[in-house]
Amino acid sequence: MTEVTAAPATAPVSPAATARLLAEAARAVDAPDLVLAVSRNGVRTVHTGGSAEPGPVPRELMAYELGSASKPYAGLLLARLVAQGRVRYEDRAADLLAPGFPVHPAVRRITLRHLLTHTSGLPGLPADFYPQAVPRWSTDPYGGYPADRVVRSFLRARPRHRPGTRWRYSNFAVSVLGHTLAAATGTPWEVLLHQQVLAPLGLDATRVRPGPDGTDAVGHRRDGTPVPALDTGGFTAAGAVRATPLDLLTFLEAHTGGAADSPTDSSLATALTEVTRPVLRRGLRHAHTHTLTWFQHPTPYGPVLFHAGATLGQQAFLGFCPGTGLAVAATATRRVHRTDTFVATAYGLLAETR
Image 1 (cartoon, helix red, strand yellow):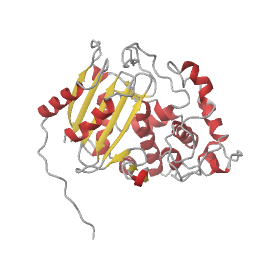
Image 2 (cartoon, rainbow, N blue to C red):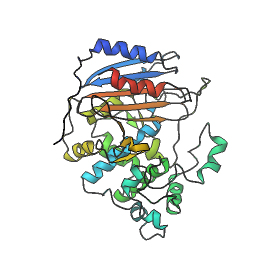
Image 3 (spheres, rainbow, N blue to C red):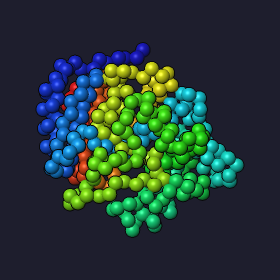
Image 4 (cartoon, helix red, strand yellow):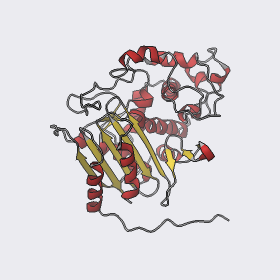
């Protein structure tokens, strides 16, 4: 018999109390531009601030670079294509990318699931990425490494570990997934993401390229100097998404069931459920749990799912509690550093705003 433990009962946090919590949390983060946004069953509370003077476009309407927080979008795309029967999680990436091309036996065994869940055996980035990236590490490390080079590096790879046996976070692997899905569907990644994820969820302010002048947030180094907009080169699927905080809440609300309009397409609804299901454990005593694309932590109130990301001058955090309608989105325009409080502050809101 399974023992069911009821979550501790708590009084709902009012919108006014939520606003006070966000304002207090904002004081812990030093950034030129900061947005902390919470949705509870579709009721939104947004706090904006920062050390810079506000510009003509409100901070919550500007598009921010998500960096690695782009990966949940790639995960939802894969899950929807699987639900549609267009690909399978166990399809081998090399067979879809380059049928018949001779590859290392370990590469031949790498599946779409391995690529998304960081269990492919591939390194974080290709070995030959660093020589071209280091000279421009603080300005444009990815732009000189295009899509065809990512694919060639994958087909020539010699994974250190057998696929499926070890977890190692890999921008390389998720980027290969993006190119593989584009090859399997005959559709460019940007178009595929828009058709399958962005348009169906109404994410009109989400894109993978810089927008019109004045609509994108500007990142900053630790000393406050601005940095150029991120060019992800061939690593689009792993880190190119840009979105407004309001669109981030819409994306998260779709996962929690807290949006006013739930997806009516069965494949999208199936995909949204699939990406919240735990699929692996790792670390000491298997303490770390992951879904297809989210990190998952247990709490007395049920699991929280989250993903953070950083670029040369910006940070983002996405988190939610499945089934409760609670979602947190946060963005900041300062490069991450060792003593940075941004992620911890945003993560804390998942508990404090219950």
